[in-house]
Amino acid sequence: MHARDSLISEGCYLAGCAIDASVVGVRAAVREGTRISRSVLLGADFYEYGDPPEGLPALGIGKDVVLDRVIIDKNARIGDGARLVNEQNVDQADGDNWYIRGGIIVVPKGGVIPPGTVV
Image 1 (cartoon, rainbow, N blue to C red):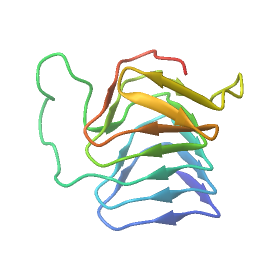
Image 2 (image 1 turned 120 degrees about the vertical axis):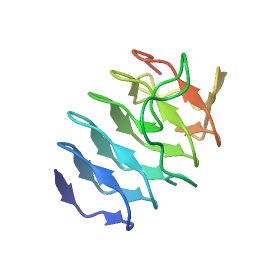
Image 3 (image 1 turned 90 degrees about the vertical axis):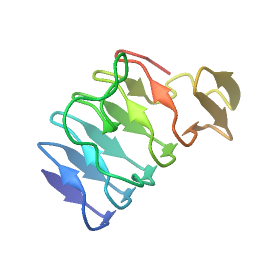
Image 4 (image 1 turned 180 degrees about the vertical axis):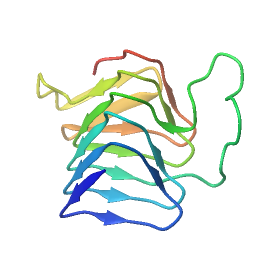
């Protein structure tokens, strides 16, 4: 795990990830291979033990995810390989369990981003 210029709350699970210029909230889970920059993760209200509910990614941030300029509200689930980076510099847009305002990608509370999603 590598963190630079970031604030990380207690109770987080951070494994083999890189975090730069970001805030990671309480009980956040960030898995292997994930890169986070210029983002805010609000964490979770609870820990998830065992397997996630059927058809859902695990609570928190999955493996090999890339986040840049993203706000992720509490209890969100970001599937493996998702890429939330707004490469096209869209100012405003709406999608399934995400939206963009002022160029910032926002995943609302309890939002689910399926594995491999690119925004």
